[in-house]
Image (tube, rainbow, N blue to C red):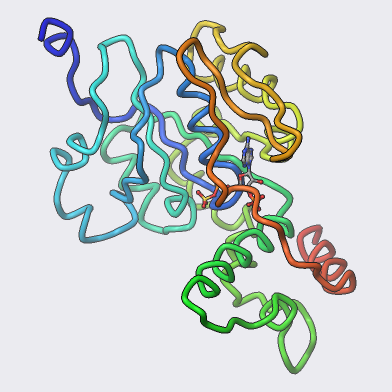
Length: 250
Ligand SMILES: Nc1ncnc2c1ncn2[C@@H]1O[C@H](COP(=O)(O)OS(=O)(=O)O)[C@@H](OP(=O)(O)O)[C@H]1O
């Protein structure tokens, strides 16, 4: 009881705003190994879903974990990054909010996004188009810039909305490809950005060869992320990949 008295639900001081399929869950879970971080377990979707936003800040606070005064509450909702209203809404709540954005090679991210939807369709025994057929315009055979998985990967377009409200110093961009290969340096950059003492070390991370990813450990547990992370991507026609790479680079 005494313990509970010291804790309460607090609004986040940092938010992982996206990008979907870039490693948002890995980033949140890894940061949560730090004793000064308290994470909201599920995606809250407060700022991007009108129905939730209308419930107000008390509702939002209620979705947060209990935390001590010296902890940083953090939530992740990857759809925030691409939802136009979100930057202004976060700014209105707290213009000192620290924003974390994790990105990944845009073409790989688009294929990962496709793979998630494909896998959900398969679970329901539904057919789904090939990635190539969605990613290219059926007539011109050029990149289909209307396809959502491709639009989401145009990071600079979404970023410009955030920069209308927040200075770059308030946005920490994490390299999702580096977080997969060698997570600690990325995590240490985030610790510094959040004003936290260095705590995370290689003791908190171990490579699991069968998963092909780093997994997490502290004094009481060790765990890998769920199987929905690290799905096998389809073999995509290299010509389509080349077109997408070219599109991202221009
Ligand atoms: N340590 C570790 N373990 C497992 N997975 C890891 C890890 N680090 C990064 N990733 C990558 O995270 C990708 C999923 O990204 P998100 O968590 O942002 O997806 S989601 O938007 O919340 O659905 C997921 O993408 P896919 O491989 O395409 O499934 C992973 O590559």
